[in-house]
Every structure is written in C-alpha cells, then in structure tokens.
Length: 126
Image (cartoon, rainbow, N blue to C red; front, side, top):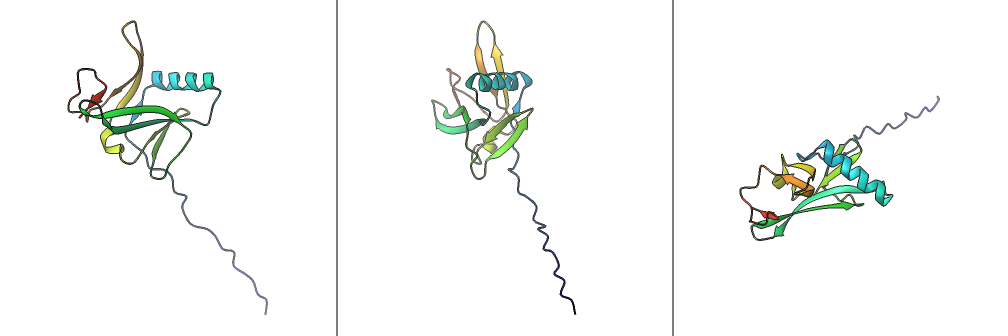
C-alpha cells in the first residue's frame, strides 16, 4: 500500500484594508506626487484624520505617514495611497481633497458634505 499525502492548500483569502469614501482630485494627487518626489520618498501615504479641537469641535489632520495601522481604511489614487483611521471614516465619508494654487489661496482643501458648520477661520467644523 502506498501512502500518498494530499497537499494542504491554503484557501484563506488575504485580508485587504477596508476602503473609505474620501476622494482625491487629480490636481491633489499630482501635488502629493510632486511633494513626495521632492522628499525623495516613495514609502509615504497621505493620511487624513479628524481629531477633537478647534473652535467648532473637530479639526482635520492631513499629513504624510509611513505607517499603516490596524483598521486603517485605504484607497490608492493613481499611485497615491490615501489612508483614513477607523474613527475618522464616518466623519470623512464623501469628502473630497483638492489642491488650490491661486493668488488668494495655495494649499490642500477638504470639501466635506458631513460638516454641518465651521468656524470663521475655516480650520474646524462640527
């Protein structure tokens, strides 16, 4: 009698980070890529978060991060990975990040349909 072993096949599906509803415009993606090239880094992600603070109760955090934390939601926009932490996802669902470069304003903007109001300085919302 021959003993033939049946190979064990791993049928587990690899888990991927959940997605989020934050959009990144082509202009903003281009600016992020440009900034990363200037830094000489290709290991950074654009992290968007909401934290308590400001005059209206919540403030946006937008920064480069090399970490990917447990429960982070991530979406790749043409090579730019946008990461949102689990707590911030509901506050940012449907928000759009853009980049403006005009005489009046230069920088990233966040258009958030979930914001019910903001303070006069425009840095915080509720």
